[in-house]
Each structure stands twice: as C-alpha cells, then as structure tokens.
Length: 396
Image (cartoon, rainbow, N blue to C red; front, side, top):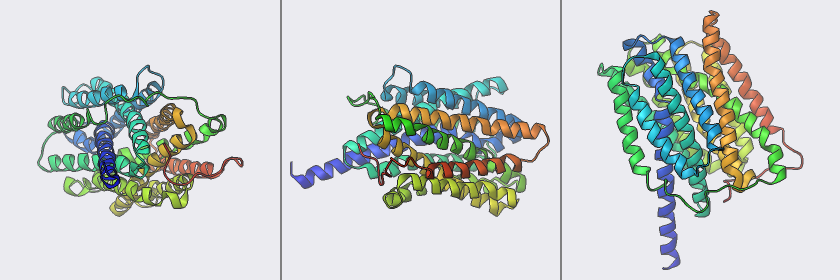
C-alpha cells in the first residue's frame, strides 16, 4: 500500500474511533447523565415533582456517578467491558424511569444511570484517547468530547419538542431510551472490542505527586458546574412557561459544549493544557454567577453558553493531562479524577436542597460554586517548580 493510501486509511480509521467515542458519550452523558435536566420541568408539570425532589433525584444520579467512578478503577474489568456494560445499563435505567411513579424507584434508576454513565466516560476516555494517540491523531479528541454536548443538545431538543406537543414525561423517557439503544448498538463493536493495550501500568513518581492537584481541581469543577447544569431549565421555566422558549436553554448549553471542544482542541497547543483548564474555570465562574446578579432570561441564556462552553473543554483537557502525566496508568488516574468530580457534583444538589429547607434562595449555592471554580483556577496555575508545562495534545 502506498504512503498516501495508508494515510487516508489511517485518517478514516481514526475518524471512526472519534465518531464512535462521540456517540458513546452522547448516549452515556447526554441521556444517562443529563437528560434529567430537560425532563425536570416536564416531571414538575405531569408528575408533581418539586424542585427539592428533583434535587434528590439529581443527587442519586451523582452518587451513582461517584460509585461508578470509584469502581471503574478497581473492578477486575478492562475498559471495553465497562464500556459495554455501562451502555446497556444506561438504556435499561432510562427506560425504567417510564414505569410507574414511585419516587423510591426513580431514585434507584437515577443511581444506576449514574454508575453506568461513569463507566462509559472512563472507558471511552481510556479507549478513544489511547487509540487516537496510537494512530497519531490525538487532535481528534475534541471530536470525541463534542459528543457530550451533541447528546445534551439532542436530548434537550427532543424534550422541548415533546413538551410542546403536550407529551407527558413517561413516553418522553421511553423515547430517550430508544435513542440511547440505537446509539449503543452503533458503537457496540467499533469501540467495544477488547485490545491488547487496555491494561494499565504504574505512573512515574513525580507524576503521582501531582495527581492530587488535578483531582482537587476537577472535583471543584464538579461542584461548580452542576448547579446550573441541573437547574437552568427549571429557572428559565419560572420566568416563562412556554416550553418553546425556556426549552432552548438546555440545547444552547449542549451546542456550546460541542462547539467549544472542537475549537479548544485547535488552540490547546498555544495556551498549554493547564492554562486552558484554568481559563475555562474562570469563564465558567462568570456563567455560574450571572443568575446571581440578574434574574432575566438573557442572563440564563448567557450562563448556559458560559457553562456549556467550558465544562467539556475542562473534561477534555483534564483527560488529556491525565494521559500525559500518568501514561499507562492513565485509566486509574482518570477514574480517580472522575470520582473527585462526582463527589463535587454530589454535594451541589444537596447544598441546594439544604438551602431550600432553610428558605435561602438558590443564589447562595451559586455564589459558593463560583468561588470554588475560581479557587480551582488558582490551584491549577500554582505549579510544581520542577514540573515543566507540557503543551498540546496528549501523546500516546
């Protein structure tokens, strides 16, 4: 085979990996993790779900995400097994939300969806980034992580359309489960096949010493982003009841997330991964604080753009940084960072529920989240003097 032909074949293979990774994250995160956000206003209307109840359902999902992240790095399973098991559980737990109106069962299904989505994220990050690096196409990581935003936007549009047609939440959950099943079937073989490179190794000692900085910063992201990510549509609904208007907040969030990863992957080599990570923290802090200073719909839309436009940039950059510093041990580090993130996002809705019980407005936890994000940015800029900044996409 000639060199140009081999290059074209390699490009196509790398593109298939990126597309499979994007679709897997769209299913696991856009539906398994975040579909509850646009579903919350629908469940408030037809199921009588309160904002406090929504906070507990969100917390169940985030607790599951924490358990999934912790178990992903410790189960005797290779990433491909976590990948397939997680996708299957996302589909089943999403469909189960349409069965009955038991709040206890809803808590269980959201917990299962959280576990499953964490497994798929950790496995996809490990499989896709490793394969793209081996193919010499690490810059396609932006396409992989754009899948989260695309999934969020798609789920938001589906929910908005169904709500506008007067469809209740139960058939809406079934529709999302059907979409998830189709997506899972499409990526089952392309990214789920076991490879010889899936078993991790031991990270260099100096890299191990810097892990806690990465995990803490990533955990602060979890606390910082989760409040707007969970309650933006509900806040918008409080301003205007028309789902064709307030329903756009979540698709805007997802579209910003998808576009941002594609753009950031082009400019990461100019800023450096940790600088880009810190900058994204600062922009997100502005977005989180906007609803505190203004109660207008414009502030919510701009907040959706700021938060949606940075949270997947941070995820992508953090996963690349983990691969750069941990090498063969990256799957374990990615799992530990994801666990820190999950702990942060678990605390977020609990803080909302607590402040609600104390009759305090949501502006209180939003302000705390914004300050946490700024602290995370400062933490990332405080570097080990012996460590040199590695710029650009991660190496295989």
